[in-house]
Amino acid sequence: MPDISIIKRGRPTKYSATTTPGRATHYTEKRLKAGDFPTIEGLALELGVSSRTLYGWQDQYPEFFQAMEKIRDIQKHILQSDGLAGKLNVRMAIFLLKASHGLSDAPPPVHATQNNYMNISPEVLADAMKLLEKENQ
Image (tube, rainbow, N blue to C red; front, side, top):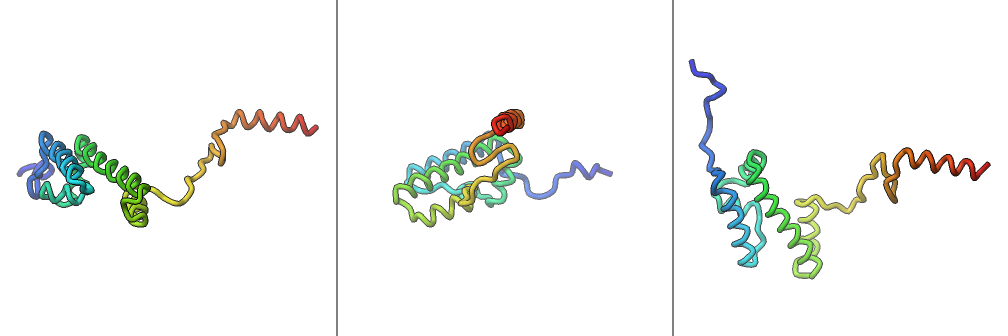
């Protein structure tokens, strides 16, 4: 009886380590030259797969992760620069930056080793408290 763990199931992947990352870069450059906004969904259509497949590939193949990151960086740059220049609908740019690029209106969380102004080590804080106590005596 064959070992079940080595039997491959499903359709063979369309991913090729030698061509797929390059095709992703080519898609991005082609969209930029045409004055278009490169998208993950557009890349999926170009490669003949779903966007879910692309996200799976980026988790599995580091070189493809880099190609996907490049698309996201370009998107973020275009949304920021064209949004500030008034070339895009500002509300749409803000929405996309929040929804797809992790930006937020909320202030960043203050970590246990930070206050609102600067990082202070526990040792420096203890020394400052001692100095304050001496001044108040």
